[in-house]
Image (cartoon, rainbow, N blue to C red; front, side):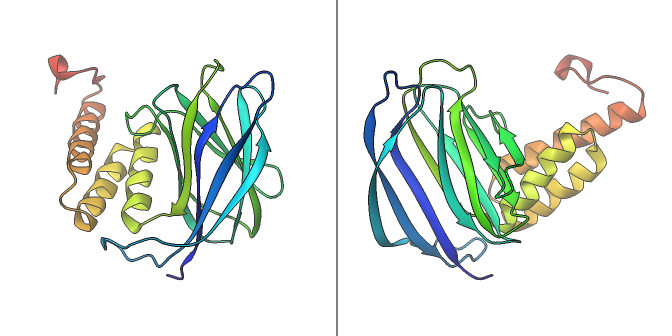
Length: 205
């Protein structure tokens, strides 16, 4: 898989009013993706810009190529993050608030076209925000398979989700979430077969 540039936005502010100008460091790196490998990220250059942050939502851009699989994460210790990925054509590709039960926004996506993508970073509740970290990097095979399993769980495709979790376990056998996800999928599939609703451990089939 060819490497491509990633960037990181560090120390941003959401919900500033009146408008403030802050420095944001864009750290560009080249990532040669190899599944399961602990790879050092070598910084190639640092670009500092002055940006105006609008209340409640900030726009950031990055250049992507058709077919690239990326993982986008927005993390804050101060507010509930919400991220929207917009295509070069101006269409919303994906949105996320909490990912896999964690209180930060994450998007795993395969880019449909080459061009400049926009990330709209904000707060789920629209409250005055605070510091956050936004990163875009190459998605590993594990992240893509695991994300597919989560999507299947949301659409109640429990049997297919269990298969995807199993594939994720093969790729990263030391991470417990895939095992827990597979067990949940199998239980919910069994409950679906029995015509029951699985609400918690008290009504396991």
